[in-house]
Image (cartoon, rainbow, N blue to C red):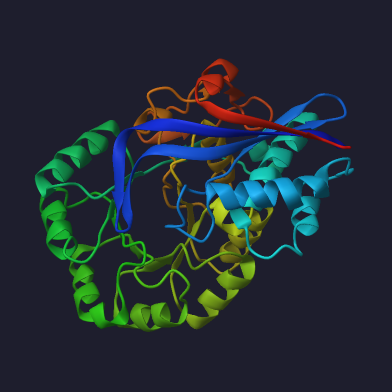
Length: 370
């Protein structure tokens, strides 16, 4: 296939509820969408998961737009691409900027699957026809509200509950949740809010039989996490520290974690995500798919990735209605009794709803070969 055109949309959508973590609160979500077109007029779609501010990692919407416009699009326009893995190689000389890379690479994966009359899941090698999903819940004003929120999601059938923690909002919160939900699979996500000075506090998590504690220490660390993992029973899961297969190899060799969270944008695209999945599977290390408050386009990519066999822990890919009054795909992603049925249409399996998309589009940019 030859990439003849790339269209970028800057989007702005209001989430149904504010989402609070240890480093801030968000309700209005800005993001980028990419549409790539081939010589036959077929389209593929990808989504940038970078936020407006560099609070998750160093990337932002503005830096993504700069990298996409000035570096990545020129690399793919008029390029003949046999397989999306080649895009990973084309982009390899550009340091980091993984979320920008993933935006374009994801769109090309969607295009490739459609051209070959495959679902994106099939193109990746996935076999599952439905996936288990969990829910990620931000920090609430009081624990009573958190308990009632979780009760609703448990009744809806979500297979795992993830709650955000931070210093001062941690052990007693988890204890209260365990009192109300003794058997629910529960995990705590710290978003790098702690240091090794908090090791005695983090040891207290062991009494709650958590599925994991996610990224408790610094976002760029794998050394101190190894020290922590040796000191606690609760499995440590790494998120922000893992940007590549090489990071994964080092973390596992050091004993820094027992679980890996794979986020497509964070690792630079589906090709690298699949490499990490395969490596972890060979070593018996479970993985799961983390969420970045995606719209339906990014959510569809997560669904497809999660059909790979080593995604044995429920991910953060909740239904569209969890985040949006109106999503930009048709049909929307729906969770039934804790499962999402994998779509059978070619590509990402969901049709971009251009009428809704237009309502939330702030700016459109078109790129063709000069």
